[in-house]
Length: 228
Image (cartoon, rainbow, N blue to C red; front, side, top):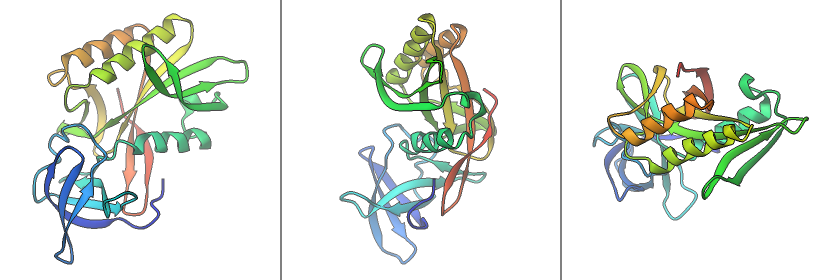
């Protein structure tokens, strides 16, 4: 996924009201950026952190895309993973799903949800695919999700399990917007309910996949698989 213009480096001053961040641009000017992330951004919201901004598309002039850590850029835009996966599916770049030629986004299913992608092969077999954004890393090399209570994500895991029970294939793909992680686990201490739903869904036959990302000021793409 290429950015329309190269990202701009800045310094985080503070994040507040979940979707806003004040930043200091390299020319010394202060600005407010949109943060497309409703989570806590645990470990990524410290004042003074280097960040990377894209030109805003709404009322604010900037949109915060990445936070630099000592070992990796970390993507905090929760809209990016679906775009990355859509591109990868179109390019046939995800071998686990390569036999599914037909892709629909935001299809109603479950209790009151829309699955991120419904994949169908030429024989009509279906695969229900949920995408989750991951940026938390508290232990070197280990990515975790979520970074706060995520009741909606726990519900998605139960709904995927229900699709398996009906005879379909179902999977959750965790997009790790980092380059410094080789493993992925649920953050059970931060959301025990999600960890239980994750384990129960996996035991029921829901497939778990995870991929790291390759990030730079011009683009972000899905990278190597992460052990999950």
